[in-house]
Structures are given as structure tokens and as C-alpha cells.
Image (cartoon, rainbow, N blue to C red):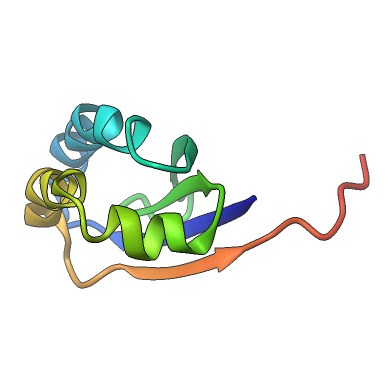
Length: 99
């Protein structure tokens, strides 16, 4: 299991529209190979910054299968008009859970 963590800076004033776009795009993630979950988190300190956290079976499910799919194009169509700059994306894995 890997987690895609995308840092998304959204144009000021577009936050509600962006959140609606992510909600609309959720089914495209849900039907994608290896996608196990999706959450959207909003920064408390920087309200125009969001973190999209997607759980994938493998990095390849994200970077190869999803990125080359029509579902990715739909995600970008819905979300990218609200981006203030290109997203930053990295992958993580859990190394420990302590409580």
C-alpha cells in the first residue's frame, strides 16, 4: 500500500469550486485500478492549500495506470482550473503506527 500525497495550492476564492470538483472527480478515482481510498484535507494555517491523499496498491497503479487513463484526464479537467500553480506529488508508505 502506498499513499499519494498531492499538495495543491488553489486560487484564492476558488476553494469551494475546487472542493466541488474533487467531489465530482471521486468516482473516477474509485473505479481506477489499485485505488483504495481518497481524502481531501485543507490546511488550517493556509486555507488555500489542500492535501489530496490517495491510497494505491502500488506506485505504478498511480503513475502508470491512472496517469495514462481517461479518468486522470477527467480529474484534471475538473480540478486544474483552480490550481494556483502545479501540484507537488510524492508517495509514502507506513513504517509504523504507534497508537
